[in-house]
Length: 272
Length: 336
Image 1 (cartoon, helix red, strand yellow):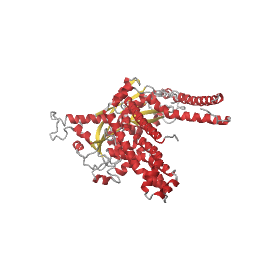
Image 2 (cartoon, chains in turn blue, yellow; image 1 turned 90 degrees about the horizontal axis):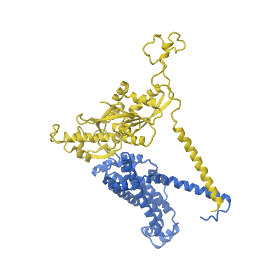
Image 3 (cartoon, chains in turn cyan, green; image 1 turned 45 degrees about the vertical axis):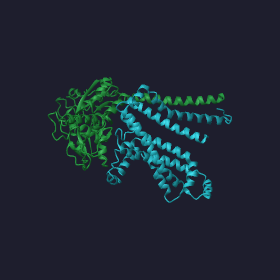
């Protein structure tokens, strides 16, 4: 690391402190993860990977998190575009309301979902007529995960859309009348990075969602028992298995996230 | 990087590490002597009692309150109240016991000047925490299995664990009993949504035992208790297909039903929850389970070896075997 720009002593001190802070923060985040990995026993991991209940939980987690992310993309990206480009009365309030799921403690989110969608909830009778009871179904897991995770995508996409250069859009408007065409050929490519990083956060949050899922969807192996729930149940009966599961979950999440990040770089070539 | 630079970084790192280390050390060494070091004065036998008898003649020094009978009448224990120094006990208790402990803790504090801190949860979880070193004085488990595990791991004081009460199961019904459940057989009707505890916690394992009993007696055509209507055949699996969630503790099952969101119609909990609902008048309905298939769970209690307050812990543990303790437990639905 060359420090030709660190000319004065005060500069050097500031940079030293900066490096120290960065180092401390890395340690802080990485230490617990390392601590878990230190307990790894490869044979045990292998055994757990062949455990039917675990495989069910992994499949369910990946399916629900993926679906939740897709739904979030479909619902949140247009909403983000709307919020970024339009001004209306009460915009700040709506903005805050849509961000609310992030601050809600997951258990509270779960109870809120129950009060909205359970048989005795607000929309309960509607679902009853359709013959559906949401709590206890996989759909409930997807709903819970979408609820808590989509605000991440919304925020990220909204920022992406806000930071767009309006001049480019205006030039495009001179060339074509189709809003949709402008969106897909100009707006989207320009803000795709923000959307992808938001989607990644959403997927990660959905994958790790525990409290709301447990409260709203319940804990039923194969139907609603996602990886976090399975880990929780195992931790209290067979801590070794619980630790192995945690390692598997961390590994899966890490693999997916890094793949997305690498793909992103390759696609655009630069490392801004 | 030039050397001055490196030196600065190293110096800062060392200083920060030293500060953190010093702080951690002082915190660590003070927690180990958390409960006041002044030896908790007397063991339960107040050594003060003999005194009033000795000074039967000249009583001016003794408190004017009693001593109406200078005769050293039997103990008259309330007279000289042994003074205990202020201590506290950390109790790890099964969630079904939380309320009954809270009920007696203020009287206990008045008498023994000892603060009761209750940490409640499922017994299996608590046992894990104890094994991992969480500071705890007394462990009260909803299944003697967990006190036995600790005993076999040599984590108990004097290797002593006893069973102090029992608890049975009952069915909890959603407010209003929407599915009209009137008997155990109704639980396996199609469309009934059940919530039970996972088999890894005591109430869940007792539930499994009851289901198995029903299956192998009432539902078994070669058993003398076979119920001829055939309503209980394969009860185990029909019940399981109605279960919509496996909760992680008894209180969570009660909570899920109590939320009254229509998500669940019935569940299996302890009769102590039934007694408590009656005490608080919460209006939640319960249904009894026939004694022939009900499971009686044995509750265990033990003082943890690492306790820093062995005397008070022992007093606390013994309280539950006294008539007063047993009566209190009965009031809350235990030991029936």
